[in-house]
Length: 483
Image 1 (cartoon, rainbow, N blue to C red):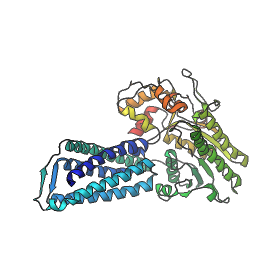
Image 2 (tube, rainbow, N blue to C red):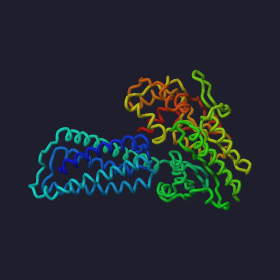
Image 3 (cartoon, rainbow, N blue to C red):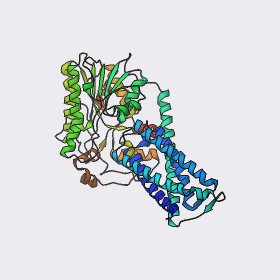
């Protein structure tokens, strides 16, 4: 058996598996380049990718003989150490989906196999004169060389993303902290490990506030915030004597995903309405009631706005008879039950939140590829808000003791086509490729309304209470996030 050729074939398989893992997990589903916590993981990925690039290109058509054979073993040893370090960092910073864990396991097994096969021939190669000998393998060599170029570009992409995250963290640290209160207060946060929750908790910590996080992933959350927050897995673990000044409820399963089957709707209701009700039950039994409960909701409360209807929807507009509207209405009703216990309640109806995580990276992907254009006609309204303004808005409500309903959207609303046009301009990409809406309706059913329909929502109450937006215009918001 030609172990060297078999090792090269396994390397080719490694290249295919690695490409799937990078594109599907790291770029699409997990969006690592936009995660503020992924800087170290991306740095490791960049170094490993550049090592793999050299290995793929080098082994594609050359035989490493003499001292080069030992150098190759040393490189493999470094790669194994980096892989183990990567596993540790991943477990400390995020909860990997099942498909990514399976893929990583297969990659580790396959990598161990081809490294072992190459190591078997090392003594024989070491006995030869030191040289890099040209030994091509036809199409396999071409594939490995191309894979080496691809993984090298991926490594440069990860290195650039890690650098960008570092610069953003430095900018955030250098900026003036968001002020939530004049004195130190105790905050209880649900949904703290999500995109918005992470930003909120870091802002609270920079402001010197005490934070407790309700999360199912206690260990990951503790690592995520460097042990600076208290993490609890259940409200039942909090004694009734525990005092919190403010409760901020951000928990909720991701709304975009599988079709809204009966089972999926039950999950969405339980993660929002069910958890909020449990939160209010704990408040009812608490010896020291919090002064405020700020609870997330969404502009889906207003249902959908007919195309051609330019009416701005303030907080006074009513809901519609449809699932996403009912979900938000019941969610808010569960939160307002805390008023019976003397707690001031504010419900925050979030629009599309723009940040380096969340929906924006996926929305920008076709535009980056030069395929941006109107989606489903493009006339549906799109109401958005920069994540920094959202955090600032939460802080504003904490300082001013706001209550009632608040639209968390920017003053500027655009159609979907206008949104894509501005994004294409910022990214310096072409605009105009139309995308029909019927395939989304076929796949997503009623859920497609989130993408194909919209609402023109105005932040009337935030503005009336003196909140100043740092990013009132989309152009400025995107330039900040993409710079």
